[in-house]
Amino acid sequence: MDAQIAEKRNVTAEGVRMAADRLSGVAMKTPLLESPWLNQELEGRVFIKAEVLQLGGSFKLRGAYNLIAKLEPAVRSRGVVAWSSGNHAQGIALAARMFDCPAVIIMPQDAPQIKIEMVRSYGAEIVFYDRYAEDREKIGVAIAAERDMALAPSYDHPDIIEGQGTVGLEIASQAAAFGAAVDAVVICCGGGGLTAGCAIALRDVSPATQIWIAEPEGFDESRRSIETGERQNADVTQRTICDAIATPTPGRLTLPVMQELVAGGLTVTEDEVRAAMRFSMKHLKLIVEPGGAVALAAVLSGKIPVRGRTVAVTLSGGNADPDMITSILAD
Image 1 (tube, rainbow, N blue to C red):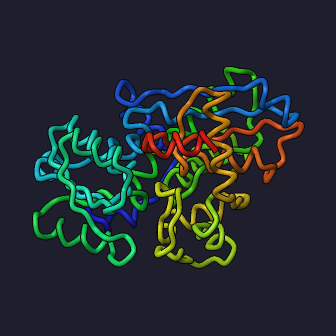
Image 2: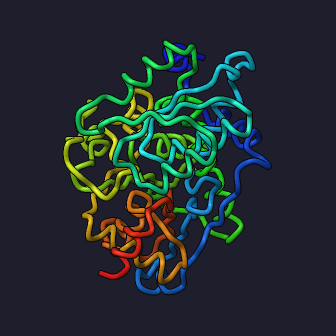
Image 3: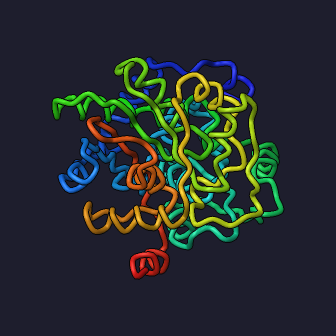
């Protein structure tokens, strides 16, 4: 399916359920954790969806595997091209290896070393670019055309969105097993693939659940896009520790879904992100990268009310360089 055809197909709850079937036995059903300390401090109930424990260290394997699995065998044999600062890169590289499928990943020159090493360990080819001066999508499209390979966008594709939506299905079913109905889910948001997929899934299985997005300061273009009704752009020349969600703009497919189904956006500072990373290590015993900690940061900083409510939070990725982790924990 090429990009133009993909954009004509709606993302559906049934598509998310089919993706869940496809991923069964492949992706991990990551745990939904509860911290008594956090519940007491916030006077509510908080569930943590630990996608840091997913294969590849983030939720990205879900969409990547779903997309590659649905390619026609002849197309898949020629390979896929993706662009990513690291988590989608790892998801695509790992899924491609599962299918013995060639993969080319466009990655920024300053991507965390651990992400570069893991992509290479899965056997993918890396093409580096300057994230502050070059357009990664243009590079990817050109390579795909030159080599006759399929595109695997990081968020703006129905198969990617539906694969990521399986996180939402799991949150609802796991919370129900705890005897809880989730009032709100706070999702780390970059281009909106995880948000859109979870929102569509949860509208179907838990329609009373609110969806909120969390983004870092300076890269809250999804919140601004939802509020204005038009795709807004982030200044990608600025630096941020939240590289995993430092996307230039929300997707053409994801924004309409977010406009319809997202209750609002929450913006957190880098200091709040660092505090959330330290909390995760101390109280949850989980390593989380900055971009994967923004939803937890929004809850810990009081930017969404928890008192008397049940709120689920995504820890969406844990691929941080050891030196960064050491530095942040030492603050």
